[in-house]
Length: 446
Image (cartoon, rainbow, N blue to C red; front, side, top):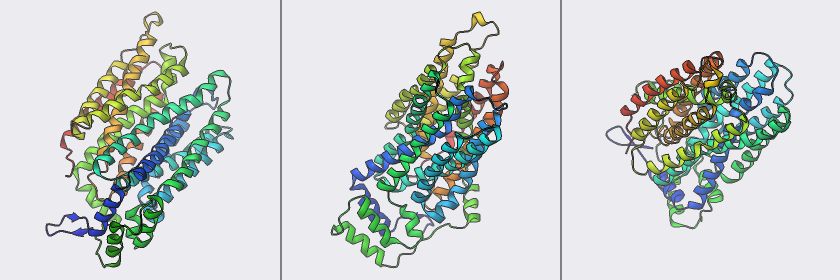
């Protein structure tokens, strides 16, 4: 990045040429989107898998195994920025997908609560460190901006595909499958995705530029995107690579922390990330116990409908993004999510004859639909306010806030799930209302 007179960063000739090259290869953008969608879906499979196995586990107190994956995600999110600078976004993502597969297989050998907690923690570290590279690679490799927004929405929506997939993998549990066989099957998903990422995605352009490896960057783009070395745009990129172009980066940790502290958008996004994670991950982990509490039969079928209910919210959010600014749309969906939480709070009755399990399943599905729309819109703007050098660190910081919300939710919901569903739903509703108000101070850069 070159430095303009007013102190703002502007793209240099090399970066402009790279964007032109990538924008001219829609097939490459499609492959990157598919690979990153599947990677995000595999994260969903590993995150939600324990919720389906909980009814079959006889390990005593399950609060720590339920929270362990989010503690791990917190650790991985904190380390993601530093690891990405050392290894590169692509290499980090591939390593973490392999670690997810290994942790899933190791879980099948768990013989007690603490053994299970350790395996879930390792899986969480891999998930937490994989999320920032997924969205950082999408921000860098997919051009132009309109196509990138569409791809980011699809990547965010792929979490729904992961939740549907894990519910399908869990369906045999109702037919007598062991939870060990279920976990072994979930380990195949990140293993396949690691192979696809290796074959379809090049290394991060910003990482290779910071390493002074621009010639290698051009070679990778030529290989993965099918760019012609004899093309005029490619020759311009080579000429820019040969010149001495100064790159100004904020590289020190202290400098980046200062940027984050002085950016009010970060604080607003942090509040939003904490609130939606507290609400969604808390309910999703304890979903089957919630259905049991309200007297709903066929819990695994209801869980599959819950996963599928995210599709309408995802589609509607993608359509509305074409007409409404993301911050305003995010405030709208957060408000609906808060209202849906309030509706869940009124489904419990002390009298078993007055319970309405079907109505409870409907309200829970409504919650999942609108909260999925929140995630969809949130991912289109949470990396936009930051430069390429700051983006991995900022995404890691926001991921940490999301993991903190997830961790707190496990202990709160575990304490309230039996007999206190109204209180369990009221707290996230209040947090989501605050998050909706925070959206009005967010402005996207032009």
